[in-house]
Length: 289
Length: 248
Image 1 (cartoon, each protein chain N blue to C red):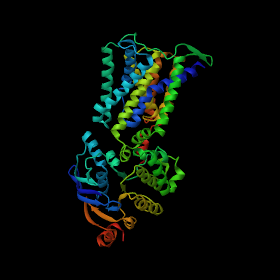
Image 2: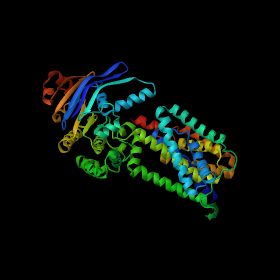
Image 3: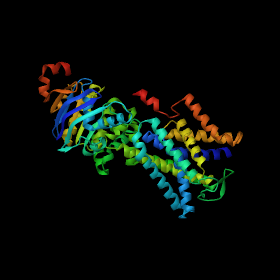
């Protein structure tokens, strides 16, 4: 029972981590390796707003932190990525460099040790199906599912959301209909960074705000995206559940040190068996044309 | 009035369009005919501005050097340097070669993406218009675009372009790979768009015979230059043209 409950929770956590990465890749075809850095940035900003110079109330600090992270994402596109769009290797190098700069900059700026924590939404715990679960994890599952639903509605019924999907499927065809490719890329990076921020606000209360978490989040996000098929929504969620349960199972029967090994092994196995991922269309679509 | 003056395009040192000038009076259908590699698609890229995007991407990755010269005006306003999405805003909408509909979106979503520039009211009117024009699309509204047949995809592509409120609609090889029955539907639809909405249409095609009856004016492209222009009847009368493009 414990495995099922915590498996579900862990899976939702993983998909929250990966959602922003997938969104940016699926729309702008850009692997955002600064994802983990943006995640930590949001946590650190929220902590800063609450504790140091302003001591803002929790909701204000959180919204402000997510907003600023989204703006950082938009600026990254506007001033850096716009020049190298479409060259995958350069995109990876540039975003990874930005991520490194942010993370190591934070470490240099004093983000060290265990003193940085965010409070949970609601403290305390309850029992579900005979398993004790703290409220924060339930909030994570609830908001996670709400985020999936909101994203689905946005990309299927909203004018801008539909335009994003148009650009994702055929950039030039969408351009001919009056959709601005750079604008959609800015929106997607802002949204993706905002989602990274949302994940940070939800997940960081479970642990500490430390720089290493930024790297781990990036690795998990990449693992989930690669296994699900880069840029595929359904794939991301399915892959989160596969890895999520695999991690909980190894934790239950082996030891919790193997969590990262599971994610990386899953990448290797996927690349060996089906390089484009479970729902990946990279290769297949090209062949059909 | 949509005018192209002395358009020249080079891919590296190869000339793709050589001094092509085209006049497109409002509410007319203009045909552009030529064999493969005559420059039809390049001309469409130039008119819709896609060439600027291709050029930018090639420059960024240090690929082919593309040079574009010439002047494009829409109702007296110079649009030569406008990006494709801004040209679409001005009313120049391209319905591209090979249709390029969004394969993973449903027919309805394809049309909605097309109406990105329209407000709610226009979208509703346009949707009704498109579904009346191509009633066959009504049966497939919930189907993914990629699963439609070639003819249905072409109808969808034209419908999607119409949703963007074009003043000048560019149709690049709309008959490619269609059965004669679908050719009739597409050609009939094209004429109806002009007749009912007054939209100016430029249509390119390799095989001119089915298109000739509906055009007001036509140009023949060969190796990037216009070798002949005139009304449909005039083109039909020219013996060289007859054998080369009409299969007579």
